[in-house]
Amino acid sequence: MSKMALDVSRLVFSRTQHHVTAQVFSCSSTVPVLTCSTTEWALKKELASTRCVAACQAVGDVLAQRCQQAGITRMVYRAIPWTYRSDAVQAFRAAMKDGGITLSEPRRKYIGT
Image (cartoon, rainbow, N blue to C red; front, side, top):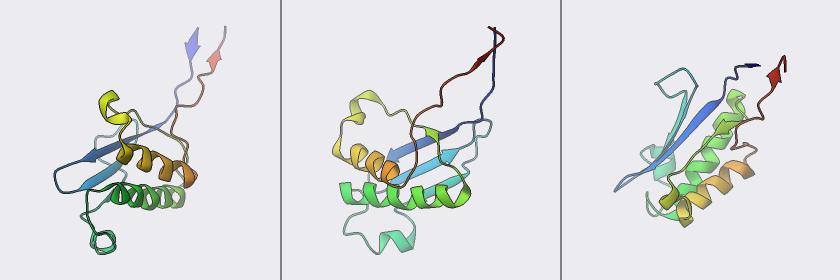
């Protein structure tokens, strides 16, 4: 039984003491393909705080738009379990989904069973 290899992007979301950052990596790369952060001036000047829930939602909106423009519509996102239920992470995930990005791995197809 052989598996078909799929090129699925990974989404990494991080919050530091002062900023929120989201990065998209291809499956075979350690360098991000797309990034969005509250350190970017265009995003920072529109926000009251660069770490609040609204900042996480704004990063999700902008990154979803950039992914759509790059043709990336599906990626894997696995949050750390104790941060997954936070309002900030939920707002980020909702913004990505509202932007048309599917945050799950595609179903595996087995060939030659």
